[in-house]
Image 1: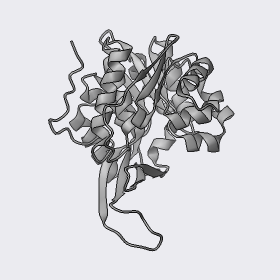
Image 2: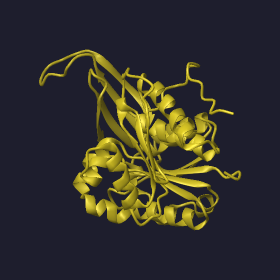
Image 3: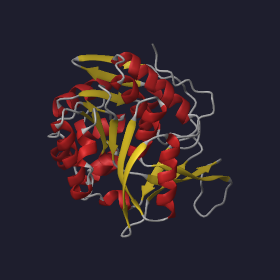
Image 4: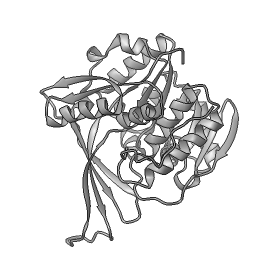
Length: 309
C-alpha cells in the first residue's frame, strides 16, 4: 500500500430500518423494529475498511442539516478521514429499508445531497494521494453524480491507484439499461469488480457463477468476486476460478452484507494478503454483519478483526 490510504467515493445516507416479525398484510398491523442507522453503500465500505485496520478516506456530499452533522460525527467516531462537501440545496441522503421476517431486504432510496456531487467539488489532491479508489454504482445511475465519479476514477488511476466497483443494484441497472451501464463503467480501467449474483446475471445474461465471472472479467478486463449470499462467493482472479464457502446460514438482516464484504476484502488485500485469505476474511466479517441489524452494527467484542500474520 506504500503508506497511502484507501479512498472511497459515493453515497452517505441514513437508513430507516423497518423489520417485521411476521409477514406484512396489506391494510394490516404488526409489531416489529424501527431503527435509524448510518448507511450509504460507499460509506459502509469505508467504515468497514477502517474497522479492519486500513486507513480510509471517504469522499461524499451531505446537506447542511442535522443529519449532515450526525454523518460527520459518525465518520469521525469510526476513525474515517472524510472529505464532505456541504450544501444547502439538498438534504443529507436517506433510505427506507424494509426487512421482512426472513431477513431479506428491499430499499427505497431518496435522492439526497450524495446524488449531486459535481466534478468541480472533487478533492483532487486527496484522490491523487490514494493507493486505491472504490466506487459504487449509485454514483453512475444518474448524472450528477456520474461525471464526478468518472473524473475521480481518472484522477486516481492517473496517479497510479487501482480501482474497484460494486455494481450496486440489479434493478437500477435494468432501469438504466445494461448497455448504458456498461458504456459508463467499462472504460474506467476497473481492476476489481464486486457484484452479487443478481447484478452479475443482469450484466451478462448468464446464470452459472463461474460463467458470470468469466464474462464480467472479459467485459471489464478485471478480476471478479461474485457474492453468492448463503452460498459464499465465486472468485475469478488472473484466470483462476475458485469458490469461497459461506461462514454462516443465520440471516437476520442482509442490509450492507456486500458492503462489509467489500470493506473487509479491500482492507486485507491492500494490506498485502493473498486473494483467498482476503476473501475468507471478508466472508467471516460479512457473516457477522448479517446476523445483526443494520449495515454497520456497533462492534460488540464478538468479532475478531485481526487480518492475520
